Image 1 (cartoon, rainbow, N blue to C red):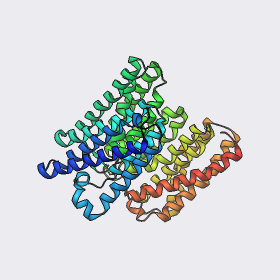
Image 2: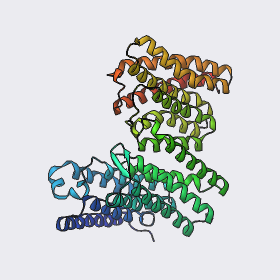
Image 3: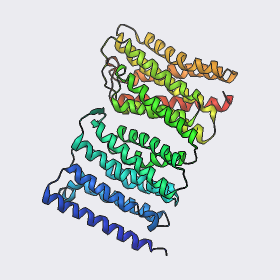
Length: 446
């Protein structure tokens, strides 16, 4: 028997309001830790959304509920009278976060993507509801071993708690409610537990409420059809990347969340495409480490996950386009984006280390490094007439990108590490890659 969607929406809304009022009364009377109240609401909201596949047969009621919830939470956050009366339930913690907005948005998007598959909807929501909340509470209460993130620090104990609950949130439903074998279920849960833990570790300003459910959905849909041998290979490569980047982390200027972000980028690149697509990011990382080893100053871990996102995201966008559109020749603009990034990193480093160099020398040296280290190997590996044309066009685009960055970026001589620098750099890289896609259609495949 199908339920009236309007009546069901009204009941869900009333239950949510009652929970909110109850938590406010509890907070006023007993003054618990603000993080505890926030995560208790998180768990309650998540538990209610777990019923959506059985309450709603269409997507529009869930989207409507999510939109109205977002509007209500925005009003609660931005209107002083409402915030003073009720806002401490969500905003008692002293950090700037949009997590409460991302939560209902993620639920609605996930419900649409799951397309009626309760397992694909409920497992990501379980991870978001239980693992994220428990990790925060364990981290606040028992966290001793800290690692650095863009917003301060997180605890190893909290991350391990997240992994444990995420593992169980995947393993138990797959065992009980799917046809997946025991071994495959165990392997999928292990891989997803690690990867989603990394999503949580690198997220900032509440983005974990978006990264965790959507990332879990994509991973689950990807791994469910795989056999045991392939899943073992995936787990082995993931473990290898974690150990490798952990061992060299002290030789970089990246903080801990940025290192974890690199693991995710490398793993996703390897998973989505062939080894040839790993050539560019590996070259950029090795060159970056060598820049720091040759620097005149002591290496300090000043770069956060935002730097990694701005460097890697332009190429990742092209990577997914190449996969989704079945266009392997997009390897050229993908590689060019990384070449531009390496050029701009080198430009800032040379300007900082060699103040005596004039701008022309710095531009030529940085452009030559970025172009030769990335485009020449690609031309050799994929040696065609089109590849030669690409390399020549790339030389021009790399140099023009360096000129633009030198003019656009203030205080270049100080080698700035603020987020604005990385967003400028990422914008230039994606622009160069888009321009380079034009000759891709003229010259065909590499």
